[in-house]
Image (spheres, rainbow, N blue to C red):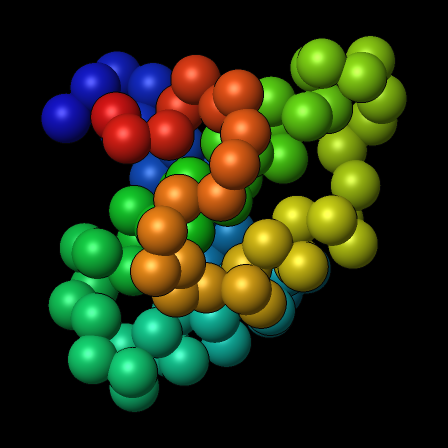
Amino acid sequence: MSEILNGLIQAIDEQLQSPQTPYVRMTLERLLALGLNEQQAREEMADCLGEELDDMLAKSRPFEEKSYRALLDALPWEEAPESNNPFQNL
């Protein structure tokens, strides 16, 4: 597993513990209920975080929680979304 993906998963783990991001915990629980194992779910969630960070950097804008939540709500992805996300498929 790459260092970038490890860092994104670490950020997801921190969000799972934070009272400020309950929607991250709800996403994990939803994905587990759909049959993903915890590692798969955390990796897909990390892809969402990477997608949002990539868009943020590409557009020189601040982090948009609404956009990040929309990506999480779209999980599980049957196919990777169309993007130039360098974090995808790490």
